[in-house]
Length: 206
Image (cartoon, rainbow, N blue to C red; front, side, top):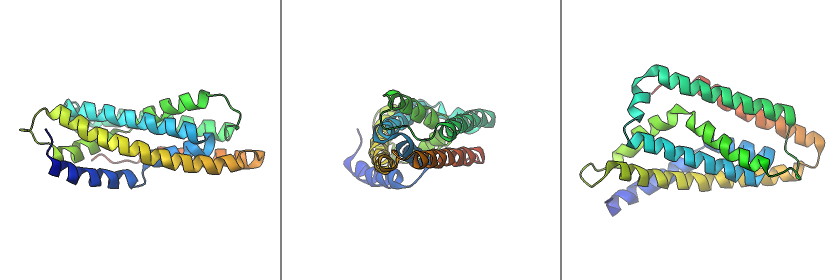
């Protein structure tokens, strides 16, 4: 369905996009710093699942609604801002999660990654702008092509963001036994989430 030459052009472009620092990478970094490697990997998985939801919506043609209705864009965007600020407040209040914390943070990290990605309307606009360049309307199902290309991006993002989170988790583990350092990590993480909220709040429509 998808020609080899098209894949050979798409994969390097997708890898380059995955390696470009962005909101998803910083979110996983913050999760790893605060809660450790496993929650960061779970957050990366949630982000990748959210990306595939955006790809599915775009492939079905529903993404055009977000691109053409400014109020819908803003509703989704401000939901994302509110959720990121909620996460920031939790980080400021609770600091870093202790090394013997229960498995809850890992489960919640997947949800947080999913929600943060789904409430970023810029993702679906990016999907609508990037993937169609590689879709061949006469080569078969457009939706299936969207899903294949989206899977490549999501898989690459999961690996890259997960590795960033693992690195941050390793640094956090070395500091987490120190109550003062743990508190500082909580403030750093809260600052990251707040910065992401501000970035999303001032986001301009494409």
